[in-house]
Length: 564
Image (cartoon, rainbow, N blue to C red; front, side, top):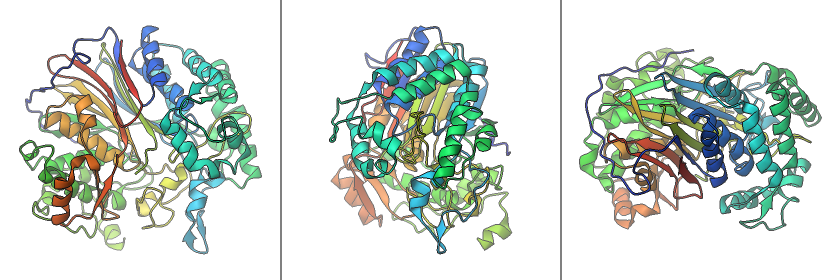
């Protein structure tokens, strides 16, 4: 396992966030931001009950698995970045793992990748890691009993909750796939009106019972007990590869975080098998060569230079990134010298062609020679003792594999689609990969999830992350740029227009809010511009140099933030 550290001198640069009435002053205990008000309240209640930011994050995760279950849940995985009150910074890898029976050609039929196999049904499922991560965080860094947090979430599942418009939209989009699996159809289709609407109430008694089983028996019920056995039985009956033994062998992996600097601030983010932290830092290294603040947040020049930097980083992502326990991921991707070399190829007057990845220091030269809907969820918490959490959790696409293990209410992920089924063949999100992300037994697929902390003089000022496939990286990056270069509080930073470029396809996605002048100006510079209503959903909490706290859920969604 590599040690992902980039050390640079930290210069002085004051934060200048403006305060608003809702953001001024200090909370009694902490702050929470999630995509759903019920989950936000669960996190705040954990703080009221004497818990810390870690307990609040766990409460949010468990509740989101109920009320935002099309995006995340205990049948999926997560990455958690923590800054503890004693100053330690940890990253917990709860990414799904390929089953022991997985092979590199398991999704090939007649020599070609069949996306139906990797996106829906039995073969699409990786071994879930979220519950192991929450249990690890609770045992080592929380205060409240995990069973207490499970019981609180179980009550929400049992009593039901009102659907929001996003949940309804995902139900409508995936109705035909959910209908293929009787248990899923019983919960998400027959448990609601034929044409669901916002405000309709969804109850999940089987999921409540599963939460209570874990509250009573611990996570062994999930990984070594009844749930693992039921999952294996279903898989055997439906041509899947997952076994109870795969569950028993799963472990959360504490990893060394990615560290970088940007204009005197320290950036701490998630290491491989996430590509998020590596490329957030790499893009910031590229942009540090330019006077971003002078360009202006709403300018054509700002969009252009950020898009060009993204393009270079995503080309490297496709070639070099994978599970570091299986692939040699070059640490040189984080080098400021490497970024300076890439930046010299970037032109301000027109879009540049990026034919292939770069060659970072430490890369294998011989090997190198040979070779937009919202999904996922992010939530951020902090407390006044100095604990900060950034956690991104996912089932992958909406409702994951669409498979609910019978009698458990637990929806399984489809994160096997995040592997490269064939080098150069795009996955659901249009991302391409190479050998570094090929399927192997017990390997963890590459991710874009980017739970990130920003620190000034050793003190956290921002916890941020996002949902939205590869746009997670661009959303997280933009929030950091707007915090540091433009002095915006989380609410303003998340509300500002977004952009995204992932190298392939060669398209620059921009939100309509940039306006026609910027959009046409980008086209004149040679960009193939795709205009989207919105890109992703991010959550953040922060504290500025004057001690003013802020918490914000993305205004594009129906989430909420709260202070207690």
